[in-house]
Length: 120
Image (cartoon, rainbow, N blue to C red; front, side, top):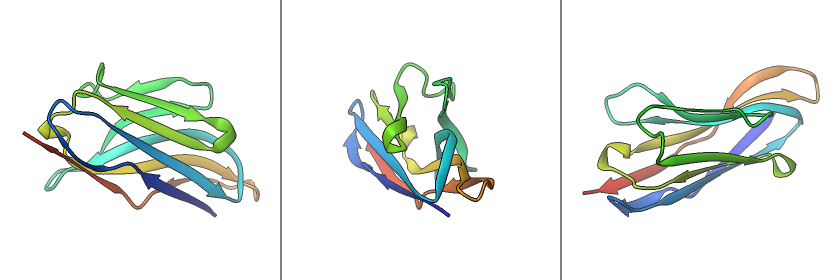
């Protein structure tokens, strides 16, 4: 199994910044992709950004130019630097990874979520 531990959420004023971190641990053979999703009240969960093992990145249009995703492969950790935050960024942010376990099973894993609240 693979566990994801998120940190870095909180309350910030509009225009401010936050940095989310997510560390993967457990029976990891390799991690193909790591990313962040978010879910606001009454809305569906949506992709924010993801990064592959080859450092290919993909962002939601709503965060392009404001958010930056990066990863430290040695630490199995993914980061999301969020700048110029807007009230509409308020949501629970979930870490997601596509990992292959030491048993050679590939599947997706989710973190428990971290709240990001942006006040106007």
